[in-house]
Length: 118
Length: 107
Image 1 (tube, helix red, strand yellow):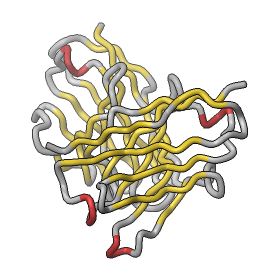
Image 2 (cartoon, chains in turn cyan, green):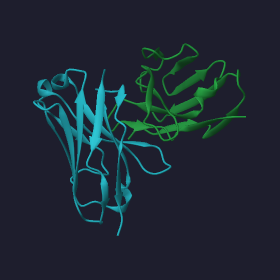
Image 3 (cartoon, each protein chain N blue to C red):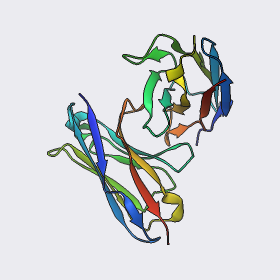
């Protein structure tokens, strides 16, 4: 059974940093592209970042809204994907979902809430 | 970025009714479109890929169609468990973008 479990959310001040983690199981993580997708309260979905697999040299892509502030990474030995979020803004407040997929997202984690507020 | 315009934003329908949700894209995405269902308080659930291919385990009352810049999700014989929000997405080009969502309620 495919499982994705996010941790690391919380309440932080604007300008601070936070690192999300996603533990995975039930599939071959090392050859799977992984993503983060977020959803602001009561709003729609926004793709945030992608990290490709080793065969694609772990290439990363980012939404313009987070480029230069967020970094996606992975540890294939632990089957985990991470999202380092720096210089957080009020508008980064959202539920962050870990998802897998090269184009569409066939499995999603339960999500982790990040609240940026002074 | 490819813009995704989903309609209607909300929809009220009766049990057993057929409903259709539309998704229009700002350019041709060559069927690179999935649909997701999100029930209140839950994470999104994958339904359809490549515009018209049903994901494993998804009930056959769900179907997708379309091409070019116009796509649709149809739900036949609406069930109570179909009450949810529905989102389209495009994966033709980065950044991947989503439609604004359609909230489906029972009448």
